[in-house]
Length: 211
Ligand code: PRT
Ligand code: MG
Image 1 (tube, rainbow, N blue to C red):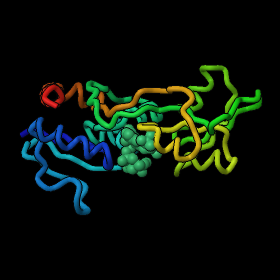
Image 2 (spheres, rainbow, N blue to C red):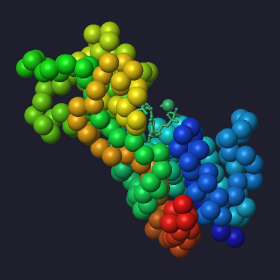
Image 3 (cartoon, rainbow, N blue to C red):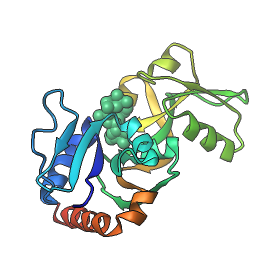
């Protein structure tokens, strides 16, 4: 009797793009993942269960070993760090970019730049590496609002089509990082359950090739 492994899934748009991948990998949830209030799901595989949670919580669960594996955006890993985890697979889904952006026509004037973002650690690192003095302002909602309201000069946010920026009179400035969703594995689990994990990684990479 082998202990059950837990795979933590990020809900929202990552989950939508994870479902076909799981299906092709033969990981079939016992109930529909996207409806109802259920959070934990058995699968057709006796040794694997799925948990659905906020993407921002996945690294914490996997780092602590409360979940053995996770599927999460690289943006979250860059913000929270990958300590205690391996990142064996780039799933190539939910692709986007972390970018800085500013109102059209905005020019730095030598003063400290105020940057609004949901990714303060990424922002501090990005500006520090460039020797730019930036005051980072952590926000939770629409970043585009901050320059409109003179709370910030720039933002650092996720950009996909650029439509959100354009609709608010802003333009991308610098690429901070390319983002896609990754499979992460708790380091201790990787050692103790190497065979099962390897099998799962293989099944998922095969599913990626078929995509
Ligand atoms: O509530 P919260 O937004 O924090 O999370 P959520 O549970 O709603 O998750 P969800 O569904 O928003 O997914 C978030 C994850 O998806 C991120 O961590 C990324 O890894 C990935 N991802 C991929 C995206 C996008 N594409 C994306 N376009 N996350 C967010 N966006 C948003 C972005 O915030 C911005 O407002 O889309 C807007 C930009 O899109 P364009 O096309 O207008 O440029
Ligand atoms: Mg969202």
